[in-house]
Length: 429
Image 1 (tube, rainbow, N blue to C red):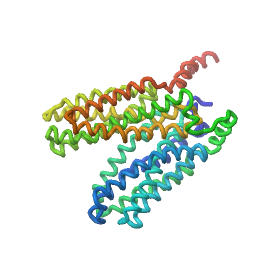
Image 2: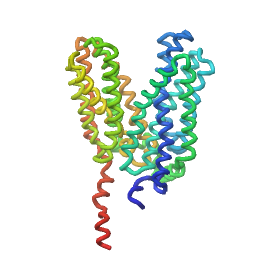
Image 3: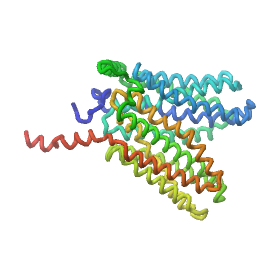
Image 4: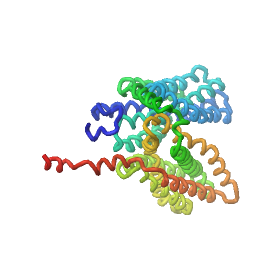
């Protein structure tokens, strides 16, 4: 077998263009999973101004969506192990498109919006853990970090795209904007159907092998032995990421405007530059993880802690420094770009359909507890400086935790070290 095909379970008999076409199909579904979170931007003003919803009601509609992501992650993992990741991803894409459409039938119905967005969140919760393992099985290790980072970075692209589209079409075209979140994932599902190899037989083989060993492909089996520590650690690691990133980002513009007295326009520009840096950072750290190992992005997590400290010490006169620090901070926050690949490799192959989703989205449970506590610090005598200090410590704690987790690129490295160079082979001939 060609060395380039090593460990590419589904893609080992496919040409690279064919595998890239399959990746593009998966990426469409992934991009519009990210984009679906922007539906709030499109409809909230209309719900309040045209249909008479209160701000609290409008907020609660989209809050229940987040609640649905956790059970959705767990159920999607079970479906992947039973029916295959390709079929699960197609079903998820069709369902979240359908549930996005349902409220258009009666847009003034608060209960319908709540139910539809909860089920939408349930479906969206399964996208990460389904699509990333599919990518991991289509490509060898040396490409996984970069490809996982491309997927992760589409959230930043979706934010930019949604903002530009909303600015161009406005509130009066809110239904048209919602349709942009409905039709594309259906197209993506069709492309996945035709372009992505079916892994159902592979999953059946894994279940049969597990049965011979008197085990099952389940969460309980996945968290046995040393993998219990690894499983808990990666959920905590994801939690530190959510708390550090959201704890800082949710309060950055407030700090700039209320504490330092900057204008909203200046604060917004500083914040948007951070987003651009993050888009670059996801892909940078993805490349680095493929080249030097899955744990090299720890440097980015440590840098976040240091840069937040610098950010909190800058004065209102240091606008240019804020721009510089923000873009580097955004790049540093991209350290999680390759986690999709890392989380699939930390556990045995038979658990790939379970490990990535719960390892990443499980961190949301940590953040639901941690973020209110972090926000409470700003209301204490410690103020915003105290909040930034806590966020710095959380990022640093995450980096320490990550340091003690295993490296998963060792197999690739060791193979390269043991394989003879082509020149040596030619000489031997």
